[in-house]
Image (cartoon, rainbow, N blue to C red; front, side, top):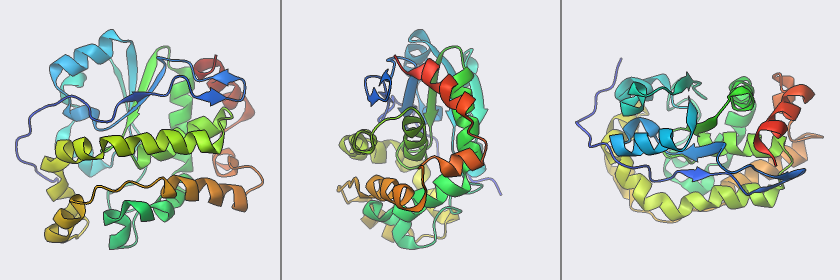
Amino acid sequence: MTMTIPSITPSPLANLRDLGGIKAAAGRIRPGVIWRSDDISLIDEDSALSLVDNGLHSVIDLRSFAEVNMTGRGVLGTHPVSYHHIPFMASVKQSVTSLEEVLNQPRFEQMYIRIFENAAPQIVTSLAIIAHSPGTVAFHCAAGQDRTGVLAAALLLSVGVEEQDIVADYALTGHNSAAIRDRLAPIMGPLMTEMGINLDQAARAALRTEFSPAPMIGLMSYLRRTYSDPLVPLKRAGLSDSLIAQLGAKVVI
């Protein structure tokens, strides 16, 4: 069943950032080639023009089918930008097993682990798009925090970024939490309803302002403890040495 939302006012992105400058094994992430973001489908025309003028070539949309059905591609769909819908989960409730995992950000670690392992094929597909796209690639989910954070971690791990720098990038989203919450407010009701969450509980949780790096620290720790190489789940899903080299050539200077 398609969810419906009230009319929303397109707005600038609240959690867009360039991964450029982060230290990698063979240099630093090249500025201007890879952006992570909150929901690009909700942007206004001026923001779309700015993204295109700054070199945007491809968008990777990590949202579920239901989320995409709610908003479509937005105004960016009228611009010459390649679009790749690669849902990291079939529905917005697939990756959570308890109410706490939805409403309590410091406890998102298990959700991140499941995404990294269970959506490994989608992660590898996304990395291939990044490696082969001739221009700037932006990837996003709704908040630009969870699914986006896992893909950012996978990309950065693939080019030899240290764990503490991956966590530091993830933590930057905390500075934008209030703006993200305000921007996504019109679509959160339908999403919470689909997950069977009481809206009063969700509203109370939305008043929380804390943001913890613990979920990403937990994911990094789990991968280090569980595998001889944190990229093992992705390599099992098709991440080859050749693709890793292509990623390095694209995003590292």
